[in-house]
Length: 247
Image 1: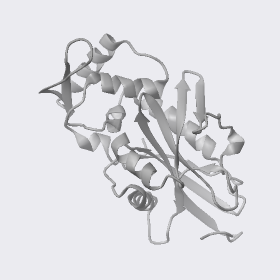
Image 2 (image 1 turned 30 degrees about the vertical axis):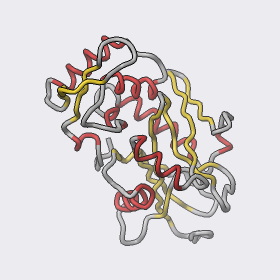
Image 3 (image 1 turned 45 degrees about the vertical axis):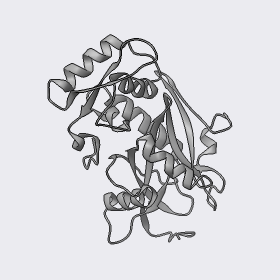
C-alpha cells in the first residue's frame, strides 16, 4: 500500500516509538523495511491514517495488531512535518510514545523474530547510542525517513517526564507487586546513570505514597543478600495507560 503517492496530496501517518526495559537496559522496537523507499533500513512501526480514522484510532489499531492490547501507556509525542521526510510525497507523521512491559513485549519478539528487533538504547546526560543485536552502533543513515530524529525526541521526552510523572511505573511487569529497587532500575536505564537508593526511595514515597497511588503490600521479595524487600502496588492504572493529551 502507498508504494506511490499523489504529488498534489497530503498524507498523514502514525509512527510508534515503542520502549521496554529488561535486565536494566532500555530497549527500542525497530524493524527493517522490506521495500523502497529506504529498503533494508531500520524503521519504527507505522501506518497511514485511514479516511475514517483519527490519528489516535490509527495508532491504537496498529498497537492492537502488534500486541493484542491497548492497555498500555501511550501518548502523542510530536508531529513531524518536514517537507522532504518521505521521498514518495508529502507525508506528515504523528508520532506516539508507547511503553510496553517486558512480559508483554517478549512474546511479540518470539512470535515475530524475523520482523522486529529490540535494540539497546544507551543514554546519559549527553549521550544517546542505539545498538543492534550484533552490538553495532546505529547511525542516522541507518534509519528510514526521519525516524532517528523521532527516537531522539522520544527519549528526551521520557527522560524529562520521569521527575514529575509516574511514567516509569508503566514499565513494571507486575503493578500489583514490585520493589522500589525495580522502579529505580527502570529510572536508571532511562536516564543512563546511577541514582542514590535512599534518596530515590524517599522521593518515590513522598511523591506517590502520600497521594495514595503507591502503597506497600504485606508481601516481601526474598533477596540473595540482605533483608527481604517490601513489595508495593500501583493503584491508579489510568496514569500509566493510554494518554490522549499531547503532554
